[in-house]
Length: 273
Figure 1 (cartoon, helix red, strand yellow):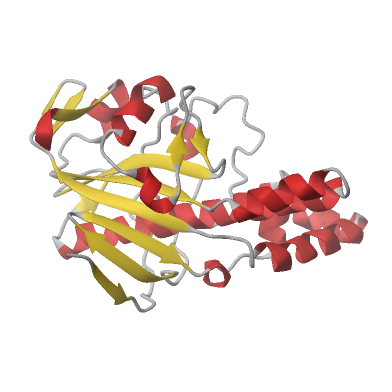
Figure 2 (cartoon, helix red, strand yellow):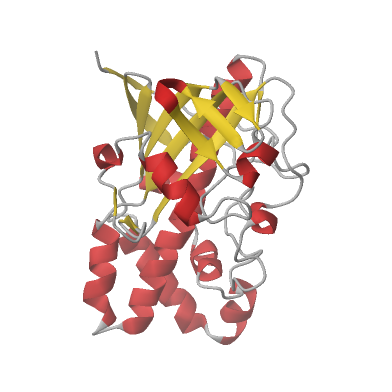
């Protein structure tokens, strides 16, 4: 049986995995469908509360500097944001699974499934359940970026910034949804673990996660090189359990690209990165 229902805005609280930071005030999704332990969330793009400054930050720029020195770039970002909001198709898939056991670096799940890696053993110790998640900003924006690249590259790059900013906001919304599930049980949550983090490579994590979910339900696929499509798609897992101690500091500290990523510390939405 499929259950669909409307969800109201929920007032935010302090972000449980990032001491000293606060979530944005509201949950942005307004519709969810549940089936066999899987929830599909659909989001309203305009409720992600994006701004032109976040779009500029998502391009690796400093909005304050650009507003003072290159206002025309800000105008392009504002136009891209207005257009991009009509093209975003943000959605997420969340599957909650009980944890059977954790032995060293292997978390055993029902049906002889498992998650394995050093980061799994480090960050999911104490989890009673895990939330396997895949979320995407959709394909329409990517198509428009490709179309614009040949004729108006600055606008295309700004559209890409819209997609990056929206994806950061979407990450926060998905984390908040899982946190609410944990809070209803009096539990806590782990950090958001993604393939490619230190101790859980893409080669390890991506096949493990996609064996647990039907990502096609939200229009997502993964190719033989383990790259996801649409391009602005993220997969990961969050632990839920009593007494879990989330890691301190931003997730950038646990990313394998920590030393080289030009977006380090520039994630554009509160509580992400």
